[in-house]
Image 1 (spheres, one colour):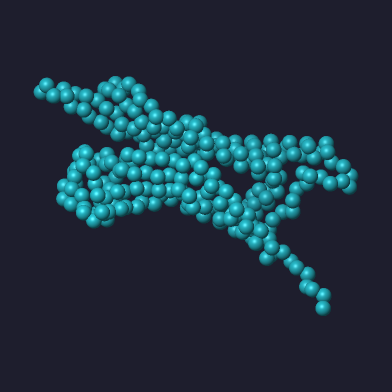
Image 2 (image 1 turned 60 degrees about the horizontal axis):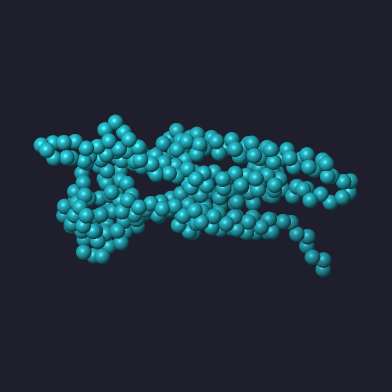
Length: 269
């Protein structure tokens, strides 16, 4: 508990300029990991071609696609596709390490620059625009931390949804016939930052055969993982809107905590 208090006091004692610099680094890493480094590729492999999508900084934390190869059997060409990749734990670990290192270095440099500027511009008895604000109370920090974790959890939990025309579906995964059941997965709150549709199984069992309801379709996909989504989309503007909403809620909650916990002198009779 004492260590948590020490870390909290050091965090809230950072200058607002340092917090702005940390926010800029956070925005930069989000852009690098979800937009700038996202690329679709197609490369020649030993048995054919392989293509997919990778993204991540400084090394990919996601690299997924399929490898296609062709064989000849009885004068017939057979095309085989094998999915590969997915989450890369090494990329996730190195990305998080680089992120925290960048935050630490940025915060330290910002504090150093602010202190040097203060020593050069400080005047005895004068107003210092870079003067540190009054430290916030522990309750305010705990409420703010809970809200930050809540917003992070709400924006990282994927929610699956289904829609059914009521007719059921009879088709194999490889068939081109449309299904009456539409499965999708969304993520982000209050604005949707990620949406995926058209799941495709990558397991050996590819045919469902009998008609299925929407709930049965969803249960089938959940029990026959892994799967790939045929359509995925990241909404970068929703990231910014969710960040603004989170900052407004956290600021309002912090203001309320400071207001109600501030000691007030009793009014004179």
